[in-house]
Image 1 (tube, rainbow over the protein chains, first blue to last red):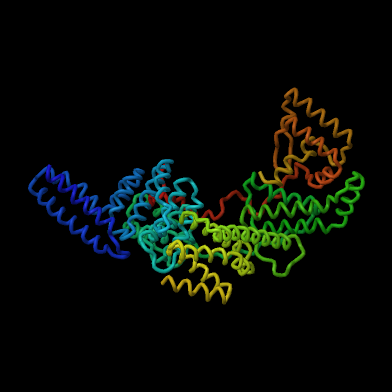
Image 2: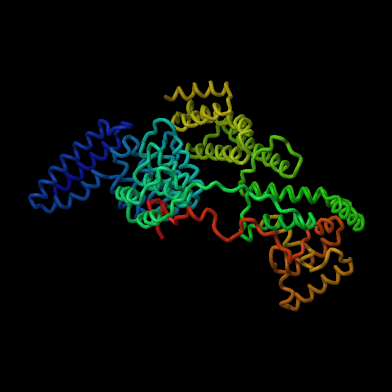
Length: 487
Length: 120
């Protein structure tokens, strides 16, 4: 009985040392104390095992769990969705998560929550522990995993992707390592091989990420293309190799093709049908496409715009429409209304599908040029609205939990990236001017008043990079000072 | 369904199966005919053709179509959007039924394989 009590006290003390550990990149003083206690217990237990004492055999499992909490959690507790136990076990870890075992415990709990199917009480358990202003990178990863557990993979991708973009030293490094692996796995599930290959070069790529990146290079035929033997060698280093074995074999037999330059699109055939029915047929093909599964791309939209330009420029059609209007006694001009409806349809289509429509530097008066200008204006309006809402809230000092602040920043940044991707670099400067005051105010508030330096520093870094891209000297100087303050 | 697809599906000229040149009297006659057929639940009245394929016809849709065609401004616009249903949409240039980027599809559920998602 005294042996059991002694073991319980020793493990309890070791756990307390783990919770008290304060060292970002090494186990630290309390971490070493914890290992001293555990080693003494291990020696005692080992001697008991060698002496054949049953109590020593019973002490082995808790001792192994205390020695390797993260490995035990990911191998046993997470797959079974044991949220609370996972959180409890990792909270005393000192090696993998160093001083942020609080964040590590949160990651373990969120991961177990998603593997358990995102039960409401589990989600509530994790959420209750998310809203601390002192939270760091691990908190961000946990937020993303929780979004995935709730079925929102897009939000999860947005959140975890941004953690991958964290620059400089990130504590704990384990959070970023897991985030890189998650992003590679998620991209591979979508067959987004270019993204997977890029993640393979990340400084925190682990064995799983490296394997996925090698598969990606083979699928894309991108140098250096790994040989099947190299893929199988990488597979042997992956912890869950059985789950990847079939995919590796499929990748091995995949024909590696040289990069082929796509031929330029063929010019549209000369119009043989009257222009209005031809434009209508094109319009139905693209905008009725939701029901028929046809793809709309920018080239198809441009072709449709040209078809409409031909229709609207056709004098015979315009005359027939005017005559029909007179015969019906219509007061409004149907020709003008048709043009407005077509413009609205095309704008809605481009917006809904996020098509990279590009810019219109020459301000062409045709339908495609008009569409590009309207898309650009709408994106800019939306971005300004979004940034203004954030800025107003920051000025009013209406604080949100830090993970919500981060999510809001990511959403604004997502809208910013989306607007630039859809139009081009011409919008970049305007978009930066729209978001810079709001994001800077948020970051300064987080830094000065709320002492949340991890998130604020990343926001300053992003602002600095963007300011350099748009060559805004004043913003560059300001953000460089802010970034330097965090080094 | 997008706004454009909805516009075609509800175009009164398709709902009533009338040509653009239909007179006011023809519109009223067609409307009453479809309403009577729908009341008797005749199979021939249940569907109507549009360029995006057949759609279900209901008494509400028929009454709405009659009302739309009575207003000259609305009718003029519906006439412009009219396209012979048998013409259908123009074939998309790359509409060969193959998934995009089929060569690069591996069918690897890497999130599940790496333990980031619950397996089936």
